[in-house]
Amino acid sequence: MSVLTLTAQEQVSAPPSVVFALFGAGAGAGWVFDAVCDRVAPGVAVTLRAPLDGDAAPVEILGRIGAVTSGRLIEIVHDQPWRGRTVLRFSAHGSGTRVRLQSELDQQGLEWLLRRRGHVMRSVPCENPALGLLTSKSGPGNLFAAASDNMAALALEEINADGGLHGRPVDLVIGDDATDPATGAREARRLVAAGCRTILVATTSATFVAVSRAMADADVLLIQTLMNEGGIAGALRVQLGERPVDQLAAAAGPMMRAAGGRRWFLAGNDYCWPRSTHTVAREVLPQLGGSLVGERLAPLGTSDFAAIIEAVERSGADLLLSTFVGADAAAFQRECYERGLHRRCLTLAPAMDESTLARIGTEATAGLHTVSGYVESLDTERNSALLTRYRERFGQWAPPLSTLSESVFEGVHMWFAAAAQAGTDEPHAVARAMHDVRFELPRGTVTLDSNGIVGQRIHVAEAVGTDLRVVISP
Image (cartoon, rainbow, N blue to C red; front, side, top):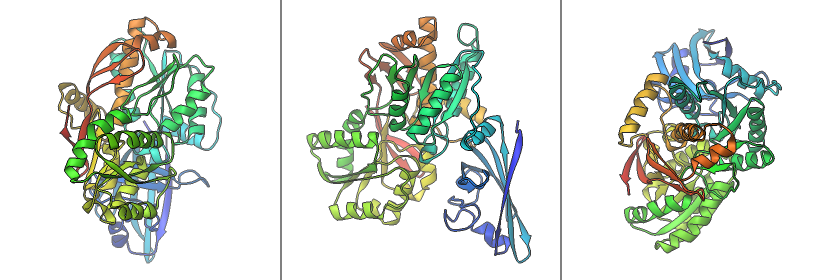
């Protein structure tokens, strides 16, 4: 239930019919809260920036259009940065248009907004066992994290319905790293103060590294759920997810055959996971017959990729390895399409997911491939059951699942299975119990050996519009 409604409005010197027709024209275009969407119709992914936080930067809202009254109203159902509903009403005002925005704010949304404003809120320890989830509800990573807290909540609802941990329900405490490592470290400390003995970290590897360092002296188990480069040692550090060496080994050969060429250009964000993936690519691709013709990195939050795309064009590359993530990945792919890059080379984007595809748009995903252990269209009985429960719980406009968010659901269940086996949620006992066990999950069988090496099937998938279709499975 909403606890309050935030409002904002804009005046546009054009009649309502024109303003409504231009809704979603693009950030910076000056039309209606910098909204971006392909068209105005129910189910279409939309992003807008609403001035809901006083003098601070606008709040970026990610959701889908839920209902439309032509020329008058657009309803957006959203999960980022909080779950709720935002309604825009268009009305004549003099010779122009007034657009009034009303956004519902629940308790979690209110707490998120207060923390964003810098309010230090005292953490009250949970009375029940608590599991922390550190995700990216804001910043460039908010695209790939769109369904993460939904998946954690669904998993814990299932666990608690079966009696919880030793007869007690498990509480979920969520933190937002804002796609910033320092913020992530502060949020992790807040989760620990709330009583979390284990934290699932579903963020960029840069945040996981920062949190791991900040928690060096804490008796807290950190579980990185999504794809990563590995390499973080310690009894209380568990890294699940796909590894770059496995992804490239599975995808490079088929991609070169599909492209009819072997020249690779590497481009991505400038932080640890892309850099590590490029290091692996420089070793693996030549072994598979490929050659490297260029490399570029750009900071997280980049919006202009013209120089990188021009470098790709000059290189004569047949294939592009894109290690951009989240909003950067969406912007980069759209710009590549506008420049016609898809007509000269194929793109392999290991971190591309269904939520990001929805922001790229149907046409601009041409030539795009990914490689992961899970896609929403995966044809397994467990995945079909998961998708049914997910839609029943969160509705038809909830964000699509992807390997980045579905891994959170699996991470919760793996943690619980280990805690149940250990007979306690004590971090060291849970960490030991997670190793050398087979987990049967929606993506299939997943193993974690005593050395922390993850075993799972890896699939190569092609973007078909805003969906991912498996084209190669082992």
